[in-house]
Length: 409
Image 1 (cartoon, rainbow, N blue to C red):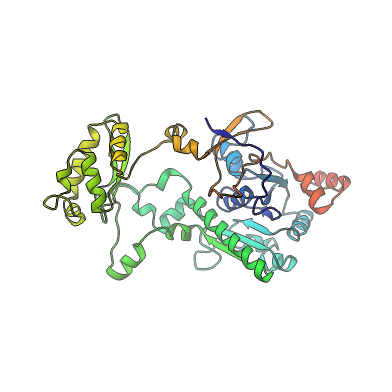
Image 2: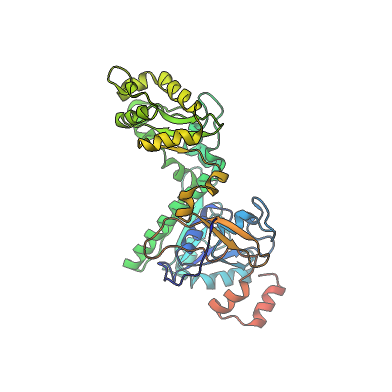
C-alpha cells in the first residue's frame, strides 16, 4: 500500500522563501509546487470567482476540485485576489514587496497591460525573482502567440518523432509533458537566480518557453541535421538508428516489455537469456553494425521469443543475465510495483474536508538530509486569504471584510 505522509520537522532547504504563484494550469505552477515541496511558503493567488482552471481539469474528487488540482497544487495556500481592481493591484504590490519568487504564465504582455510588468515589480522589490512561462518566450516573432503543451511538442520537434513509421504523429505519453518539462526548467532557473541573489543581492527574471524545453530534449537532432542534413523520422517502438534490438515487444499474455541492447555485450546477454548464445557470434549478429543491417531479422527473432513467453518469464530471464529490460507499466502496474513502494513514490494523503484518502506521486528528487515533503493537498479556493492578509500584510478584520464586500478577495 502507498505510504501515508508523516509529520517531519526536519528544516527544509527553501524554508523562509516566499513564493507567489499567479499562474494557471501546470507549467509555472509546477515550478511553484516543487519549491513548496522543499519548504517554500507558496501563496497561490487566484481570481475570487472560479479560481485556477486546473481545479476543473481532470476527474472531480469528492470535494469538487479535481484530483489533478489536489495533487499538483499541494503545499500551497490559496489567496483570492482580483488583479483587475485597483485595490487588488495595491494588495498584490504589497505582497510583492515581501516575496522572493513570483511565478506567472500569462500571455506575453498581459502583466504589462495591467501595470504589473517586470520593470514595475523589480522597482518595488529589487530582490524579486520572476519566472515567466509562455509558449514562445518574451522575445521573437512568435512571442504574442498562445502556447500550450500539445503545440510545444509539435513546434519543439518531439511530436513529429512520436508514432509508428509513416503514421500519424501522436502526443508523447498523452500527457502535458511540455508543461512539466518547462516547470522543471523554470525551477532550475529560479534556483540559479536565488544563488545569484545570494551573491549579489539582485533579482532577475527567468524567461522559459514551452517549445524550448521540448527542443532541449532532442538528443543529436540539431548537430546531425546541421552537419549532414539528417531528418529523423518516426521509428515506432524501436530506435533503430543506433541500436538493435532496442524497442518494445509483446508477450504471450498480451503485455509488453522494453528491451535495450545498446552494445554488443548487452546483446550477448540477451542471446543467452533467449537460450540462443550463437546469435551473438561474430558470424551472425554479434556486431551492432551487422544487427542494424539486419534489424528486421533480429527484431523478428526477439519478437518471436517474447511472444512465446509471459511478461514475467521474459523479464525473469533478462534479469538473470543482466539484460536491460523492463515492463511497460500502466498505472495499475505501478501501484503493484515493489520498486515504487520501496522508494515511497506513492503518498497517501487525507483530504481534511471529506476524509477522502488520495494517493499522489511523491516529490523528486530525493535528498539524503532534507527530503521534500507533501504537507497538504491542493487547497480550497480562498482557503487562506484571511490568514495571509493578516499574517503577511497585517490587515485587520474590518479591512478584510471591506475587501470581501467589494469582491476584491
